[in-house]
Length: 67
Image 1 (spheres, rainbow, N blue to C red):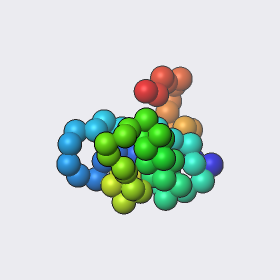
Image 2 (image 1 turned 60 degrees about the vertical axis):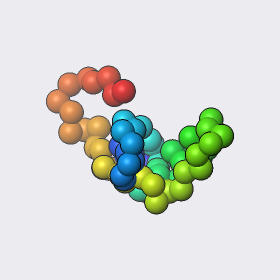
Image 3 (image 1 turned 90 degrees about the horizontal axis):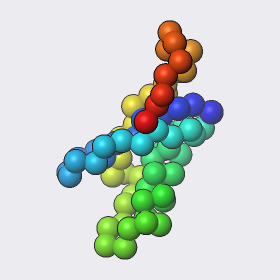
């Protein structure tokens, strides 16, 4: 498992979500599914997102809060 930062590929400002997943496609799918359960007017697809990562937690020199 890896940590991925998932953001919108284009369009409205979205922010990002940090996701623990096996790969980038799973990370995008998890975010789309999570948002689709809380939204009624917009249906997201994995292709609506891009992924930064994987993020290796061992690259941080000290303990860090990830939001």
